Length: 590
Image 1 (cartoon, helix red, strand yellow):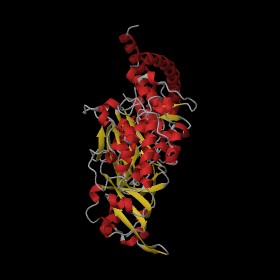
Image 2 (cartoon, rainbow, N blue to C red):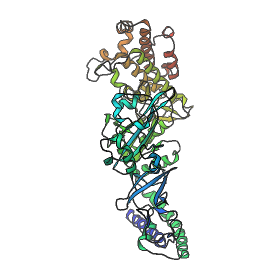
Image 3 (cartoon, rainbow, N blue to C red):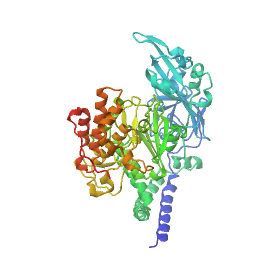
């Protein structure tokens, strides 16, 4: 059978199936008449429904989770375990305005106190409308700074015994300085309509909260019920049951034929997309939260705050609904292969270590992809270690800090190689992929090239070269040097350590004299002179740190994998004394 004939047959079968299912659905006796029901000043109709609506001929007609109760002429909706007052419903714009029901209590009139963040269950088809902004309340703060006095809420202040005066603040946009220095016991994030905020936030915050916030519902999720409501069609229940029974039997039969044909007709792209979705379903319980692309745009304010970019893509600063800062990585088109993307998600999701960056969520929506990480305020290691970067007192690291970073990276790699249930090889250790938190503690990031393997497998099979030139182990691009294994990460780590010590890249393609600029080769013959000149104004302890990092780095960049130490041995070498370390054999770098 030709492709055109198969395509035509599939379309005919699908059309028949739709007819069989849609016709009887119009007789769905669960749909009420088209009259709306008032509750106070709000008119309630599809997709919302009242649990005590006496006009209903059946349990309900509306969206799942859109049940309202009418309490003293006030429509109330439950989201999660909290009640919200319905202020207005715009059925044309599909927007509903809500406010916390608690803040309308007389005791809350002048100083309403929010007790929790707004949470929407995944089963409820609501999202924030474009009009919203977040108010962030920092409650019970012991820190005081006159710069934020205009944001301080007077009615929330109190004197806690032994802790002094406890203050509370409200912000529309949180200054980075406050967010990093505030000592507050509670943070509550609450959405509001941006146009209602105005300039006098502290004085008007009670009124702003009572104006509520807007949520949007999209599409016609319960389309059959909507058709019934609009047409007024009502039939006997037995007609529906017969129709459904016949439709089900015929539908199952046709579905078998359709599935077989679709499997044959699927393009490689469609199959790849399906494989990805199957992967997500299989590992749904272990992978982090999946965001929509619109949530990513809202999180990053339409990608307005770029933190950096490169061949891997771009990274933007974002903010979660609870006010926490995050970094959002958006891969480039060349890195947008879905399987490679999910490989990174799966790899990081299996890790939990102080020296591994935390993955909070991801977005996979067609060609739109993004990763949401913990925000690292000090950026990547790369900007701190190379002489071609502008060094100031602010971004210059001490030898003690460099040593702690070197040791932290080694411990992170040791965890990946041995501490996980599933062993992970990173394959792209380099300064740009080492992020530094507020305390300059290193975090290994970017697992796009990582490979997972079973715990007892020591040799890795890979058909493609992985990594960044200058850091790739010899055996990765030429099998004559040996087999690919965890020692390949050790080589990349060694190159990174030597760059940190030398303060420059180990390979400069613009130079005509490779032997003069290749630091690992040069330092082998100049170790004593370099250590003496580098730490001339330092103490003997600093000289030991520098010498130890150099010797360990040279061991790690041995050409043959079997001559390199394991990463666990590297940790022991760094933690031990310099007296027990011997210089490795001179490697043939040519």
